[in-house]
Length: 298
Image (spheres, rainbow, N blue to C red):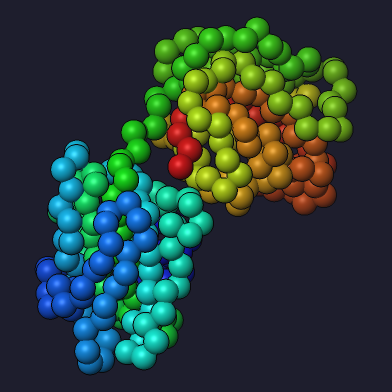
């Protein structure tokens, strides 16, 4: 969920208490400006709504949005307090569209509302306390205007591109091809580098990963020298998804700038991993080795 949306109205666990119908709360607004530019908004008179709702301002003419899609939007959010009704932020100002997963993690009113617009459309949503977390202040009714830019393609199944013939001394990676997991071997007498080392095994052709993005990846992690595996998304049978800024420094530094579709192997020294802290299955001061397929970034 985008940071601006998460901060303004964190969805309830099931969204069951959120109204998912178009009500006067949303349809009473007057939205000015064309899709593709920062909107202007005239608020209705009276107190802020206490029930969430949505209204389709422009339906759009492109491909439709469906449940499970990651919809790319420009959004503008207002604080509906019945007084200033101030703008809290807009991606038109930052020039960075947001990507929102249309799933159960967002309020029910948005889950339904997004499926009523197409690419090029505009949706207005009122998110009141019935769509908010219990700790949200009582005056927290927000109004969002979403301009739908498009939908993000689904993540890749595996790295795709040309093998580079690069290698990491002391580490062996066997690429079986297709969607099969690579084999990582870290049993070695070689001394690991005290610096981060990243080698591209397969170079993808997608956009380069940005530090602020959320990634979808497959990976296997082992300890340098022992060949002890401590984690593998391939073995769990599904890729992992996480904001890059929330993982260890070795991943943040090693994956920033890597094209989507790539397979990389990384040797991460302790100071960019877990340092002196023992983790489950990972001794303190371990050098970590990961082979990673970058499947998506948004």
